[in-house]
Image 1 (spheres, one colour):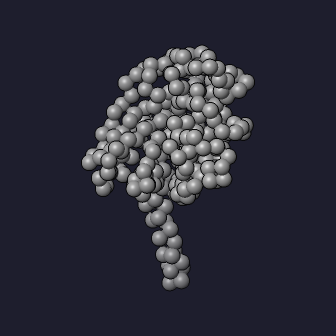
Image 2 (cartoon, helix red, strand yellow):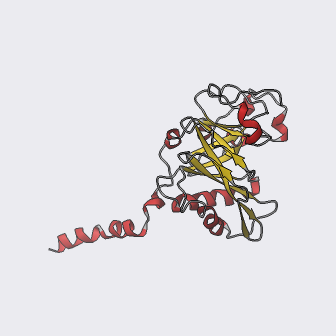
Image 3 (tube, helix red, strand yellow):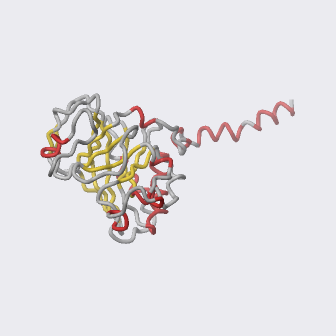
Length: 257
């Protein structure tokens, strides 16, 4: 009987661990390929009034700016102000933009995550995307924020981020993040890359999280082939003017601006 009691007690730590840890707390390593269920083309819808009711929802998703969070001594949320129209069956990604012009006060990871997660309840979104051009001094904050988000997000909801192109090539800090993808931004690029050939060895994409997607704009040149990538497109003049540039055969068909 004593032996049986010792065996039963040995299971207690695991038993209590299952109750202490929420299922989403174990989802810090998202399974690969979840973003592949979304259309291969996604249009970013920023803070402009837009009419996208002619969108082909079979080929194209929308990544819509939901709110902007300003970080400093505190975290302040600015909701989207401009309305937009789109078909009811559109696959939509909720985008949260973070801006931190100065230093970020300690302890803001959880309040910031609270504000970001507010873009999820009550909305049927296929993924959450965070857009933050974090400086080197802000990376530890950003990494902690993403880990907190991943623990508290619905386990099956993918987490995407935008990424400076240098993060995907010369830097090496994205690999440990609990994200489904990092979208390298090949427009409005960093000064040391904007005029450089994209095929330079130091500029090639090396980070696996950046391999399957790319962010481009409607009027700036982009590097290389877009084949087999999820293409995110930013409208330089808004979709009212730039939607005709998008063809069904090519992710972006450019004409003279």
